[in-house]
Image (cartoon, rainbow, N blue to C red):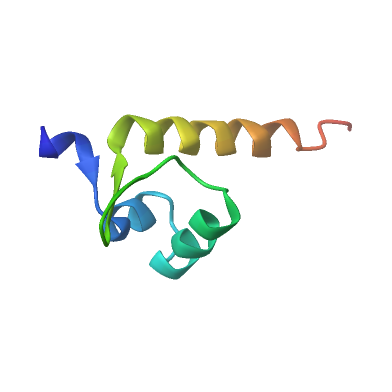
Length: 67
């Protein structure tokens, strides 16, 4: 069951960002969904993957494909 979750450090590495950026995103209501129990923050692996795929799609859609 715990293998289904990622720590902020693991999540930051997966998203090529920092833990500080993830903390900022949590405060602003952005980024992947997270769970918080007391002072512990965890991310579901599937949620992080979906978030990463969505960001990749968004970046690809913004590419200028005109010659």
